[in-house]
Image 1: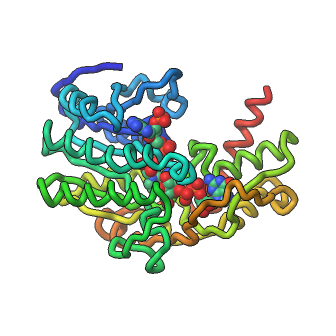
Image 2: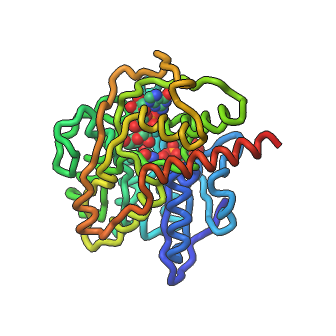
Amino acid sequence: MGGGYRRTMAKRALITGITGQDGSYLAEFLLGQDYEVVGMIRRSSTLNFERIAHIQDRLTLVAGDLLDEVSMINLLREQRPQEVYNLAAQSFVQTSWGQPVLTGETTALGVTRMLDAIRIVDPEVRFYQASSSEMFGKVQEVPQRETTSFYPRSPYGVAKLYGHWITVNYRESYGLHASSGILFNHESPRRGLEFVTRKVTYAVARIRAGLERTLALGNLDAQRDWGYAPDYVRAMWLMLSQDQPGDYVVATGETHSVRDLCQLAFACAGLEYRDHVVVDERFIRPAEVDLLVGDASKAVATLGWQREIDFPGLVAAMVESDIKLVEHQQR
Ligand code: NAP
Ligand code: GDD
């Protein structure tokens, strides 16, 4: 931990949520662009650096929490980043029904705390907010674009909608260079095990190894626009590289059901999903987002953003990675 302000030619970026999936890929990407990368880490009783262990010696990790504004003011004063990427959140939709107030405090009000800290310490800082396609919820238009009306369907979606609008509001109220990336689902071998893609690919690897027989899931008919996380963190940086801040949808433009995901992932290991997948009511949500599919035309035209990996490539890479992981765990 630690590391004070140094005047150098390199740009300095602060990432909240650096221990998460996106934070780890964004840190790698920014290091590759010769940034100095500062990561905000919240206090926990055990270290949680699995996703950033391979780059940890190139990062400055500093204590702070989205629930505590003073920690962010002090962090900004000490580190003086030019760019702040706010990726930290209670990000699991299912948990947001069980912990709606915590989700609101972190995922919604945490954004205001960071924006206020920026306004107080250095309003020249460029800010990225990790907004979400969950804000479209019960979709009002297909495909969803920047102008589509929002209709969130979970406490998480409601909290993200607050985070989005407070970002727009601080841009309009105080002239901050604050951008909101409305990112559709993006996955990777570093995805948390509770999210459906990783839950499926890890189960495939364990079933293949003879360690499990069944996989219990919820709604198999839900459809998502799934992309590859490293492609999406590039879009975040592109947003902050523009002269003007803005709001951008980032998506593949394709949608697949959870059933399609299962079929594809099990087939990667020579298995038939119908032999293993069972539906369990515990994983059915109180309100569902049935269909997400995004139109990223604005990001493509304005940012020059393109994705590099398609859905079958993503699923195959995740299955392959989990097969190696399970083999390693068995040694
Ligand atoms: P993730 O893997 O769940 O990571 C969340 C990060 O937030 C972790 O580093 C976590 O720290 C940190 N965090 C949670 N509460 C915090 C607090 N109170 N103070 C400081 N840090 C806190 O999420 P992700 O998939 O990388 O997503 C990154 C962001 O993009 C999130 O805001 C998510 O809601 C949003 N988003 C994600 C997707 C997607 O498909 N992945 C799509 C749209 C938007 P610990 O490691 O200590 O728990
Ligand atoms: N997690 C999970 N577990 N989801 C399941 C399961 C299961 O056993 N069975 C079916 N699903 C369905 C969910 O009901 C949902 O419709 C879909 O699979 C995707 O669920 P998740 O992978 O948990 O992701 P999410 O779409 O709810 O949220 C993710 O994407 C958002 C962007 O749209 C998260 O990364 C959010 O943080 C992000 O904002």
